[in-house]
Length: 230
Image 1 (cartoon, helix red, strand yellow):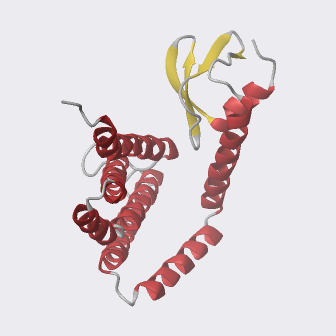
Image 2 (cartoon, helix red, strand yellow; image 1 turned 180 degrees about the horizontal axis):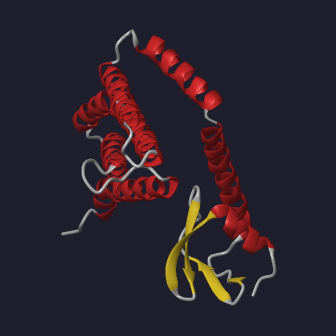
Image 3 (cartoon, one colour; image 1 turned 30 degrees about the horizontal axis):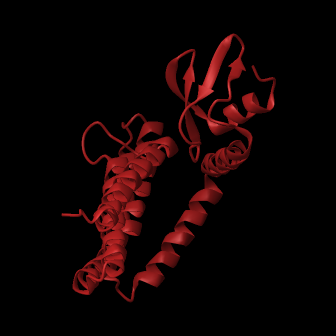
């Protein structure tokens, strides 16, 4: 009996794509510096789980339609629409947790004001995330309020503006590295040999420094790549 390889490969492709998406999102979230406390929610892992399921369900709906399984495709499509708001909600919560962790770190967790601010930030993010999921009509107004609060925060805290600019510069350096580096490009930092491994990250990239795995910021790697090569 002939095995229908093409349908089997098509049916399995959403799982492969979902696994890759989950790992990629988790890796990039850690590279950006998303909060990953020793206790509690690992936000990079949560974002990876969300990416996994969204890709699996969305891909399953597409493949189901391609294979003529209209009922399955319709069911998965409806489930995808229901789950879609969880993605921005998870991103919002992860961002608030990262900000709260940074705020507590500034005060070594000892300031009552810092702890209260962190709790209010997480509570506000939780409310907004819940509203995203239920898709309430009040959401646009709340998003405008949140955007205004973020703008005021950036105005009164120059270090936050510097962090955002640093993220932007790291991203731009990553784009430049995509065009500049090949997987086998060997770089030097003093007497050290640096070999990029894997794809260029959004903000940082995995490398081997004298054979030892490390992660370097994209800007530092770009400076090395633009200098003398081995």
